[in-house]
Length: 215
Image (tube, rainbow, N blue to C red; front, side, top):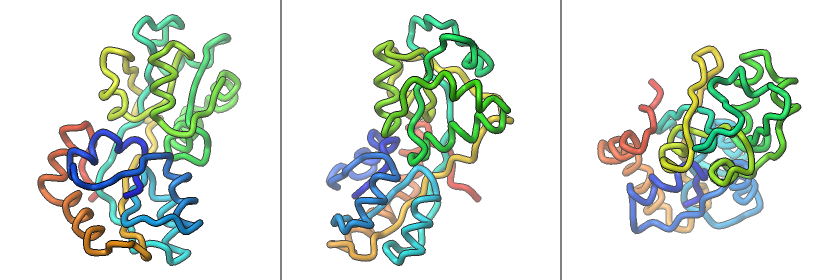
């Protein structure tokens, strides 16, 4: 099962017997395009799955959860970040995911929605391959503020603090899942997707901080 890094903690709770590879959604999509064996592809955005569907590499993707983009700062909060308006101040060090990863695309959408793209991108000191790396950078104090999902922030409680984004900044964060066309074990793939979509799967996702499936 290939799944977005933001699903690292929750998917093993849904199925402890499945074997997972977690990485940035874009990287995993490239792996599938290059023929890497996989039964299921789960992404943190509909974008990459739509590309794979158009190429006939996966079955129709299914929305299975939503998430929330937030800011995280080190516990000590050396840059005194209390709102997103603080991130454009001189000297603030921002870490975001790169543009090929959903968390990076979502962060850039938030900048656009708030009209702070130039000021924010000027302060970006690092672009990570996935949200896990962003969390690690902020927890270690390597940067002042990072953009991740609330689920990743929750998994790092005690190491980082959360600063919420205003509603007008929020991009629509949707997680999707699909069976890979050349799945080595199609039956297992379909069973896993069914489990994720089941009441148990939804409850586990909710407990981990994910929002409900889009209606």
